[in-house]
Length: 241
Image 1: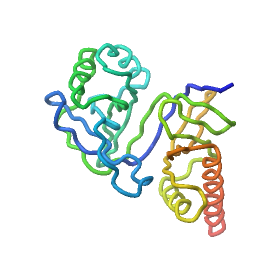
Image 2: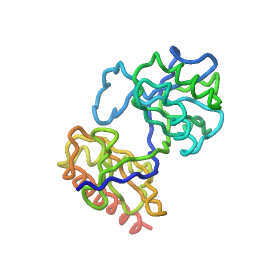
Image 3: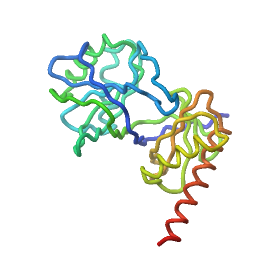
């Protein structure tokens, strides 16, 4: 019998964002993740006719429960069920709040969605130009299957899995370790980012893995490599001190 968990948490990553200029309400700002999983493909993936991750820039930060409440209020406006999350974009030392949406069926319906959200009281940011690499932190609700303690498969998004780590790896070291694993291990092609789960009242550090055909063996392989390489770097730092 599957163990299914509903958990709140966040994902932190750097994304290549590009502005959307058409099919949106006047005097609003909307950006899209234009190169999803660029590290996984190693090349520019083809543009999908369906939107990927879209960020609606807003004037105030909305907590996750507020965003989920908005999503329930505007279900009648949507062609299909979409996924809502709250986000912060770090741009030039400033944090810009946003609403992240995924699984949106059609760019042409964006203005309709914005109108529905606006009618519910959401206030959008205008005249804000964001383009290029941006650090994002996305707060969302995860629906997960737990095949083994400490390992999880996403039940909403295909090809994504998660595993717990003992401690947070600093962002600069995470990139170094990630590149080392990709280039010098038997773990097959994958992309990974860091995040956090709130479980039983405690914050748990996680690594999210994206790979086509992801399975438990791949996640174990990546976890072992992260533990080994990060421990070595930590020991060297302690020894040199």
